[in-house]
Length: 371
Image (cartoon, rainbow, N blue to C red; front, side):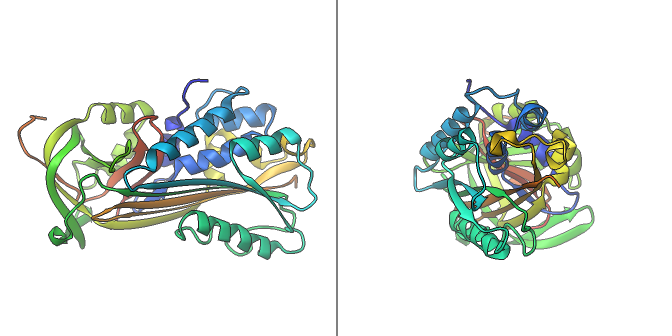
């Protein structure tokens, strides 16, 4: 199978989730890893719908091997230069619940998900706390409560989890002495003070009729952070609606090194979602209903997806970026000119992407509306 990417899903998920006036952070990679484990147990139309939602043709036998190869290569390339990328998957199963051997083998060997028996029926909250503890451990404590109290039920049969943690050091870090409060404009006519980081240097840079794009590299790795700043203070919503996979490829593929005066705010953002409605709108509605076919999990047509929870975090500072995300799926029974300085001043809402330039994989994406 050719190298696999999820840009189609990343763009579609961003457009589905981006609110008008709030910060946003999500990990398309974490969501696709969790959905791909679910896909290993799906059959017929349910499998086709999950694959289509992920922007893939109906996967053949080598689909999951391709996911495993991508995760392995990302971990190899991103853990260089003092950076850290950790990816972990888990399978939490009601004790005594039978699994189809092919599903169990795929999840164990290719997704390296440890199978942990728990007692959802009699000790639901204890199981929830155990899953949340695992999530916190694998996100360096950044995602502590993936599942809220009461979000798991006694009839839960299994939970699929995927966690990702990234710490990246800028190739060209900012000097904290140059950080100072300056105005940020959340919208036309409004202003708040925010600490802005400053530096001048050579960066991949590009312009479109409606936006500036700045790319900052991480030290010793193909991972980068891309800022997409609309020209108009209130232009982000229109820019987001114009985003397509080919749009992003065009933006990022046309960047050229320029001398740039950079001013960006320090910021931290967190998001939490139930993805059930979003995934239903994207074509996965059968997975949440009696029409679901997950016979690849237990051999019986008696399971459906209860919910898909996602939480994510990002912190951008002078030294670099820290980002984390986790996804949990509950399964229940049916029931420019080269020598001219450019100014890139991100003083109003912008979009951002943390991506691997080698594979094109978008690990994190989001928008900053309020620092």
